Structure formats: C-alpha cells, structure tokens
Length: 231
Image (cartoon, rainbow, N blue to C red):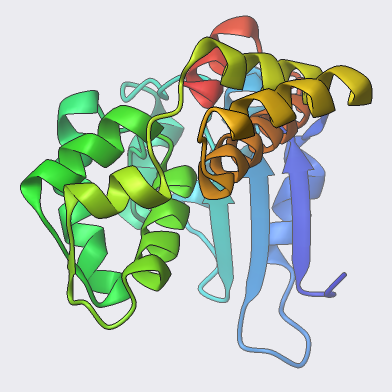
C-alpha cells in the first residue's frame, strides 16, 4: 500500500489518527489520499473533534468522505465546512425513468448510437444497475461490429430479457452450487432456444449481486442499505 494513502472505516475512525493522517505531508509525491468509508457511522464526538481540520484543511491532502447509508445532515458544522472547502456530491441511483436517457448518452462513449426503442428495451431487461448497463453497452457495441447504430433487435438478439421462470431457476441453482440441477436446467433452456449470451448475461449479473451483497455485509451495512445496493 502507498505511503501516501490512509483509509478509515465507520465506528473505528478516531479524530486524532484521522487528523494526523490528513496533516501528514506526502512523500515522493505532490498529494496524499485519505479515505473515510461509512462516515455516517463515526460517532458525533469524533466528528466534533475533527471539525477544526475541515475548517483549515491541508492543501496537499485529498480527503474523501463516503456516506453510503444516509445523507449527511446539512445543518452540522462539519458538513457545512465540507461544502465550503471542497465538493459535496450526491451519487444516488438512477430512477427507472432516467435509465433510457442515461443509456443513450453512454452509448456515445462506446462509439455507437442507441435508438429510443433499444434504450427502453435494454433498460427494462437490465434495470438501473450502472455497472451492468455499461457492461451491456460494451458487449452490444462488439455485437453490432461496424454498424454505428444499436437497435432494439440487436438488444433482443444479444441481451434479451430472459426473465423466464427457468432462467431464474438456473441462477438459483448456480448460486446454491447445485451442479447437477444447474446442468439439467441449462440443457432444457438451451433446447428451448435461449442464446448463450443471454444466459451468461444473467449469470454475470447474479454473481455481481452476490459479490455486492457480501461486500455490503462485510462493511456492516443495514438491511435498507443492502436493498438499495442490490436494487
């Protein structure tokens, strides 16, 4: 780990070591990075003791404060100091109605134009998971090749909405490590004409959700936060 990086988490963070980390000068670099995760879990007394630093922060330290469970109280002195000395950004999940427009904007990043129908189709099949959406766009860009436009039929062919009962049975069997059942269901849905790309898409999404759930539980997040994370 870099000598110019420190990380603190939730209730374990204390004002004194946090102040020391943020006021330490960088070594062999122009800046230091200090990350505070789950800042909403830090006791109010510790934030009060750390507040003087926020009023006069070190010019050579980048301090990143993460509030993932709930929005910080804008009336607090230290929250006001963050807004005055730095940048406060609310990175909320997209609403369902915002997903198609996001997809059409992001399609330009992969050098393609996504039609309105294709954006709506993809949004209904994938949901509001930004990672899954951007991953789907990259795979669609490869699927259409030199064609500059991604149409609804391309989405249907490459990443169709395969939310049929047996597809969910397949992901459940994989999650349960039931190899025999998973192979049996896989053979059945393939015989019914399900494309391999479609099945891989849903299996990839399931594995990612399991990983997100594991990370959220390890970070001590509550049930509501976990539900928002998984969508």
